Length: 439
Ligand code: SF4
Image (cartoon, rainbow, N blue to C red):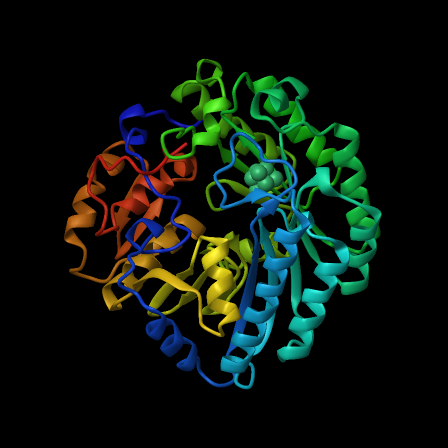
């Protein structure tokens, strides 16, 4: 069992899918900075593209994503037209200088749009960019699955897919507004295999209303039995003051902090027993999966899509609210689909906000990323004395060791990884409440 220190888990901490985090984004970062960052991409560089589809056929009560109901076809068509315009806009700026190594579709639920529309986006991207053999990945909602989607994934050559499963327990599904029978999840997983998708991820959650260890154990066993190559086991963050849709969830049914901690630890040990490799603090992969192999070789990174084996320095986001990351700048497109459409159809970047990353941020960001992805990080001699000071309670509890210019998280201290990494965050004051608890 992992050691439990409630005081060291009490501080809300970011998930650090970037550093600085989205909480530091401001509208002071303008379109001209976004334009300049695109112009500064080194010729011959490999870039990754992320396309955001902010629609779902059914909205889950717990969801923290930027998504809306896909119930009006005119709305979807207008959005897809805008996305197509932004692909052209971006291609005119960078396609002659870059090669595309990866194309990821996320949301929302990319399969809220038709298989035909998705095939059209992939064809347009391949036509406009130098993308001879991109790794294609997609997030999917099992409830919107269809035989057309299976055929399209095979034809386009998608290699990776992530299914929103969360839990197999019917009574827990009902409590979070996401009902999807086990047979459906099994059928979609099998359909992905038939389509040639080699790496299938199941997203699961702990800390859900009415969920206990037995329910979590059953869900993990079912995903393992279905052959999931990767599993993400996220802690549910109940923040109805920030996400009004969560008000439908009965907070009295939520496990307390200690129960959540035990669930996180249980998932870790159970998946380790099944032979999965831990990836960062809440992902797991088969040793044969590309991400599992990357863990063994210390090649895991963190970006807006979570833990990744993507080595590119440039992640270019397309779509409403999509985020682009450059070494010295992070920018986000307008979250409003209407304003996003207005900009890109007027041939303007849809930049809404962002944050510049100076040398200090880049160094702190690298330390935070290494701690979260690899469990250890080099700290330059004489630097970050304040951060090392803040690590003292973690060191005193035996959760982290400091020495030889390195910070190393103990193997049993994964639950504290975000809190330990946050010690290097110069933007974070102790006690800020806009983040979730560490487990
Ligand atoms: S399917 Fe995913 S993105 Fe859509 S509402 Fe549910 S959790 Fe959110």
